[in-house]
Length: 133
Ligand code: T46
Figure 1 (cartoon, rainbow, N blue to C red):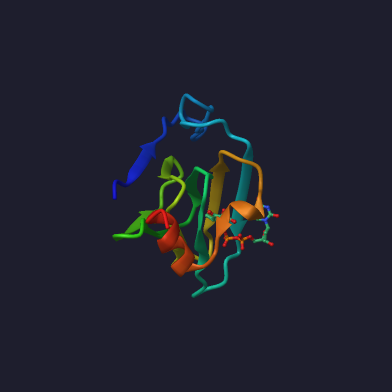
Figure 2 (cartoon, rainbow, N blue to C red; figure 1 turned 90 degrees about the vertical axis):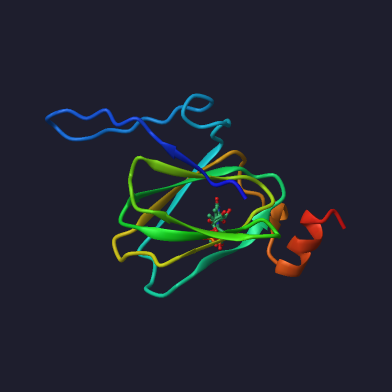
């Protein structure tokens, strides 16, 4: 599985840092939704699902967390701990987010509006989905 991480340009000056994200320029899709999670309870793992169509970019804009990705054949763990770094997750990838630092803010840019029917929340169903069964 290829891990795609973006290093976004930092517009820094003596006042501090600024990162700007534009659809189809810094991000490879139309940004239809932004959401973020914070105050994640210690030891919690979120996610445990894949998406049929959704593409996303995860950015840990503060603190750190880890993302476990599984495409049906292999698993990889990615650390997110830089506010200018984005992890691209395509559709049909099982994801779990864990090991959140207490100050972590995980922001997500999404290619589609929220749609519960796009979720595959059962791992066995996910494996069948990626095998085309
Ligand atoms: C994903 C990972 C990285 C909404 O009402 N609208 C939204 O846009 C989202 C994302 C969630 N919700 C509601 C649905 C649930 O009642 O917020 C609640 C928590 O959502 P969920 O349990 O799906 O959250 P995570 O952290 O397990 O997963 C989320 C995204 O849902 C998912 O698409 O890829 O973050």
